Length: 73
Image 1: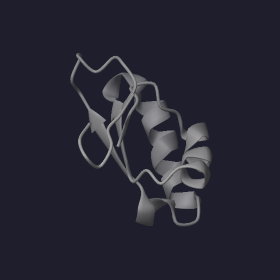
Image 2 (image 1 turned 90 degrees about the vertical axis):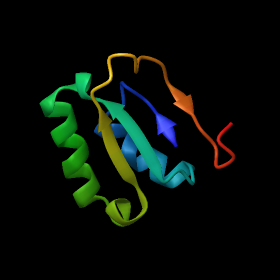
Image 3 (image 1 turned 180 degrees about the vertical axis):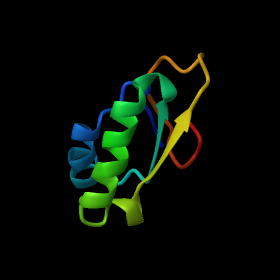
């Protein structure tokens, strides 16, 4: 899982092509325009909505990027 409060829709294609990640947690602080762009990109990139789950956190503590592996490390 990628935790990225600053995640942008432009990163989705790279994420799908260059990684095996299946989940992304973003921050609500991105704003409605950015979150809408992410949703639109998920719907338009082939296979994106089948492989990738994007969730939005309202937690104000979410301020650093991180990757959490399948072993939870």
